[in-house]
Length: 317
Image (tube, rainbow, N blue to C red; front, side, top):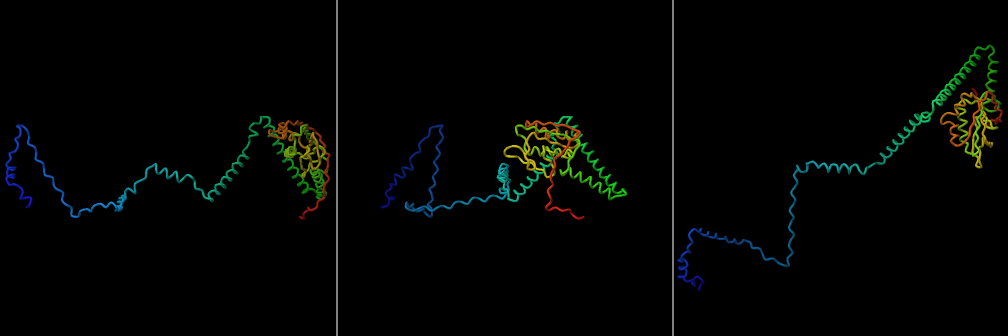
């Protein structure tokens, strides 16, 4: 027998005829519950999970492609500054650029040194008015001396051109010129106005370079003949320091006090030695005593023995 045959029809009718429970007055009837829909059986039921089965990796979803407008969007200002800073530092310098930079630096340094050396008047800026007047007087005297020499040369040329006996006049001028050259070469004695410069150096502070600077300043001031102690100064004179102390001039040892006997215009020689930054101020800084004596007649009697020429010969005209 089936289960439906076991159901009593009377019981079914009684259930259908049961009266509904009365509700209290004023109360709302309870809503009838909606039937819950039964899940539809899937067409392909999933098989039971196998505990020994390794799950296959699921493919990752691909990221969405960026929109073209997003690529063209301008970068933030901070990003631009970072890129600019990374491009500028550290600097990337090639070998050619480094060589060009060094050449330009050397050129600029040379120009700066040249401009500074030509425009350096610091020694004259701190000079007193009397020192400046003395320097101007020295320049004027030098100009007058050069003008006088020019006039003498012009006069000699005129005499040679207008003289009736040009051979005799030329011979006389040649003899006079030989005497002048003998004074310069140190083979002839000389006399005339000048000064005597005495350098007293008991502590041995004076070196060969200081005596050479003194000689150069005297020559620049127009000295025509110079003698230091008993040594005649000529064109090839040289100064050397002695290891044991003292100075040698042309291989001869001279001891202090050093005595410069100079023939020339005293009004030119004395200011040249006393100018600011001159040799007298330099020696005074070294605690060396100096004395300048102007005289109307100074004699330079030390002579130089000329050496025969080995290679030089007069050139034919």
